[in-house]
Image (cartoon, rainbow, N blue to C red; front, top):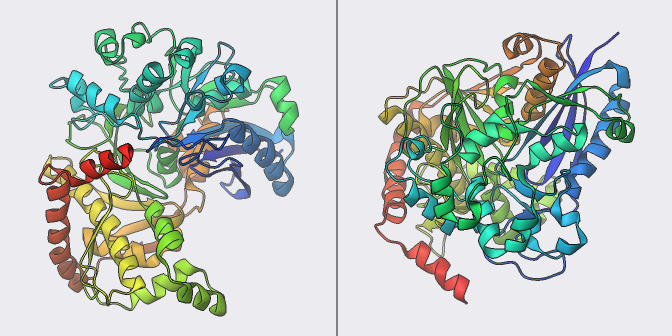
Amino acid sequence: MKKYSIGIDFGTLSGRALLVDVTTGKECATAVYDYPHGVMSDTFLDGRRLPPDYALQHPRDYIEVLEHTIPAVLREGGATADEIVGIGIDFTSCTVLPTAKDGTPLCFDARFQNEPHAYVKLWKHHAAQEYADKLTALCAGTPLLARYGGKVSSEYIFPKIAQTAEEAPAVFDAAAHFVEAGEYLVTYMTGASCRSAGMAGFKGMWSDADGYPSDAILTALSPRLHGIVGTKISGEIGYAGECAGVLTEAFAKTVGLCAGIPVSVPCIDAHAALPATGITDTGRMLLILGTSACHIFMSEKEAPVPGICGIVKGGLLKEYYCYEAGQACFGDHFDWFIGNCVPASYTEEAKARGVGIHKLLREKASALRIGEGGLVALDFFNGNRSVLMDSDLSGVIVGLTLNTKCEEIYRALLEAVAFGTRTILDNFVKHGIPVGKLLAAGGIAEKDPLLMQILADVTDREIGISGSAQAGALGSAMFGAVAGGAFPTMQDAARVMAKVSDVVYRPIPENVAAYDALYAEYIALHDYFGRGGNDVMKRLKAIKANA
């Protein structure tokens, strides 16, 4: 009998399932489902305008992903329910929601259907910045803060919970638990409570040695948070690849599976891609390139590095320290540019030639010499995650003239994210953490050769490419296979299931030299706007909030 695992990857705008043969590693079927409610950042469900920096989602969308994609991959892959050995889930993080005691999201309760704080706060919900700043001050000078690069992000769970506590106390009081969306889904599927070491560690400031931040710190953040650890934040911590629970009869029937199938403890979406590229030990960094970007590797030692997202023992694999840095804006700002700044003539040309607008702009941008546009941009359009850890920063393009062309701006944006990546790599090296071979995964890594070559040139490093177009889902399927007993360890699973492409992007020496000059200008702007030289971005954001 054949044996398969299913990996389910929940991103910012959609979720996808992947069916994988655990004997051969063959990816047999995939299915994608777009979230019907998308991201609520401007208006709420009832049409009310949301405050600045909100990013909410509806948890019903996640359930629909399961209900649509699992049956679809079974049909397409020709697998039967009794051939599924395990399921793994990854999810964007920190994506948090309040639930009732039985795990039901509070927004399903009629009392809270019209309360935004009862819904999911997506990872890029940055409206909790004031609470993040307060928590940073409360943790100043502690080893705890050093593990998180010296600054608490508004993307973390406690600033988001504190915002709910202070701004919607009725929701906070009614919530029995605050959980990550991935943890919620595992409970929904299995009935078992679940806490993920990776999610708790990177986004909840938890460590296996010290637990969560002290009650004194959390109470100072918001008096309502007194005693939250052990009550609203509860449950035994588990590690990805461990069995969190097994499918209930009711859920299994809904999606056409058998009750009793093991489900892995969930992991962060970007992190799931590491084992999919064969990274199950130290010495290699993975760049996960999507709407945002994560830069992740594992090490046998812990060494604090300013400006990174975190260092967590067991953050991915239990035996290693996992390091993460990231860029809050990557593919997002290309989509912003396409949606708002491209002339009709370019759209018409793309349509006439039968190509997508991104492909047309890449073609035009690739014909430009480095520096020809006279532009440099900052990749702060969604704030800066690393190395500045400041969500109040915003985008900049310098050098615009009346002769500037659309493709010149597009190329400057491509170069900006590459420069942002270089600041992260240089920061690790500066603080004594060597960065080994680079691998890249995600849709951008697969589909955008111009950007990948720019990344190689800007960083002066070779970059290999994942062999799977669904690296996150594949990694989750691997964790599911281990949880289901198909392999004893992730290293064993990787030998069968991991995939790396033959494609390698190598730096071109003359391009490296040309980009060094542009990078110097990027760093000058990066530090001027990001390190207090001019806080105009924050002042403008305040003016906007008061308008």
